[in-house]
Amino acid sequence: MKNIQKSSLILLALTLFLPVDAYLDNLDFIMMRMTNLVYAESMPEFVDLHIDPLNVQVGDAIRLNATIVNNTPNTITFPGLCDSPLSAEFDANVVIEQHPACLGFSIVELKSGEKTSVTGPASGIVYRASNAGLTNAKVTFTYSAGDEVRSISKSIAFTILETQNQIQAKLNMQFKLKIDQTAYIEAENIKVQFTDVREDSRCPSDVFCVWEGQATIALKITKDKKELREFTLTSRGGEPVTKTFDGYSIKLVSVEPYPTSTDKLEKDDYVVTLAISSVEQEQKVSVALKIKEKISLLAIKNTSNSDIHSVKIAVDDSDIKFVKTRGWSKEAVDSNTVVVKTTDRPITKGHIMVILLVLEDRYAEITWTVFDAKDAIIESGAMIPSQPEIKEKSFKVQVVEETFVIYATDPQTIQQLIDNYHNKNNFHVTGKLVVGDGGFNSPWSWHLDPDSVRMAEFSIELCDGLPSHVEADLDYWINTAGTYCPWSSKVVQINN
Image (cartoon, rainbow, N blue to C red; front, side, top):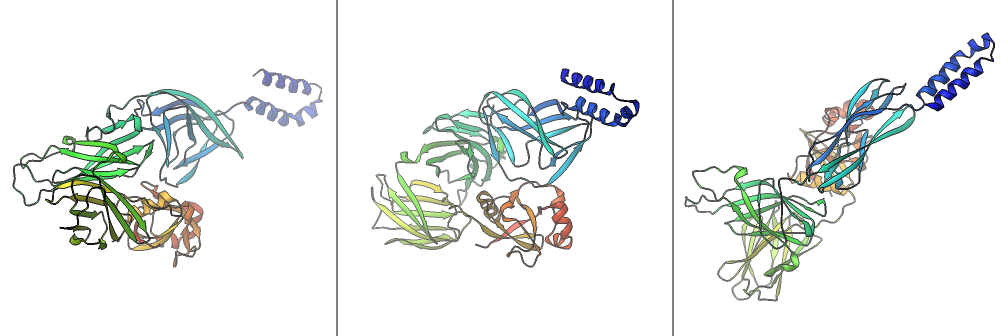
């Protein structure tokens, strides 16, 4: 402020040496200079800055909320809709996740003296509380003043609390979870959350049934702060079932309570017993899968003291086209389940048998169960084959009764598109519109930029519509909307 006063005095002193006419001729210039000096150091201001939720627990997504006052003499602008002018840097305990984002964009104007509320971060960015403890954040508001991009920052401190719905667990030891509860194995940096009961068709304990039924639960597993794909575990006849992930196995030991004919179970009633161990520690059976072109080779090594006389293979959401084993007979249960068995050539301890499979979807989840001579279960498990990274892939997308074709280059988006085809998510397609069919979206005279194609759970209504709507008013869609995000879009064909 002292510098402003000094400069103002110098300007005023200079005017004293000017004739009256010259003073009047330069009055506008002098006033402009003095006004600029007064506002030279003015900038927008954080009036209120806080996070949401106010009491952050481990696992929460953190939102930024602020009130901005424009203390400058001019109008400032900043991004709105799916974008945000707010961002943050954290010193600890928070990880930044990337998710599918909506692509709606707008420019917000804030005139001099006005104030407005803003939130952040931008769509597709999630600030996730990963550990408990004191956390410092530097929050930045980015704006434009004319052609110049500027920013202001403010620090905020808060404490992340341990979740009240989290328990501590250990490797190789059983633990119990209620719905929405999470188990944390600190030594391995693994978190397992019990998210849903997808099915419970188990025969009530007070009723006689022809079929014993099954219970299917859903789990969300995080390893090294990276969320893996959703896991489902199905217990048939009360038998344990195992799946593998990243060098570990997770076993569903039991689903409680057991149903009765007189009581209806709610989701909050369920308790599951689970156990996690390293794959190397599994003792009874070792299973490996190798995919070569269209053929899947399932190798089963017996490390138990019981001879293996039969193997049941079930494939999730995919038909089994062909099965071949040397010297064993096969029996098809249904289109995606088969049993191979022998009477005189069992797999003895230390020996391996290879089963050749041709599947409709070679990357579908495979569940296996091995039996002894008396059809008693020796071991069971499941595996999800790792898919190679795909640089690009083409899909046909349906919107109501119309279709269009897209190319996608982002590996995560490609997997989400494949999952959408298999009805594993309800996301919709979104991407940047470009003139021309791109060589793949004929007969339409537009296409989506392959590098911009994403899958989103929510988008603004501005970019929703039919392919024919885009075609009929291409100038508006390209130059105003810019983005196409049909809410009812569904992948109906995988082209390559």
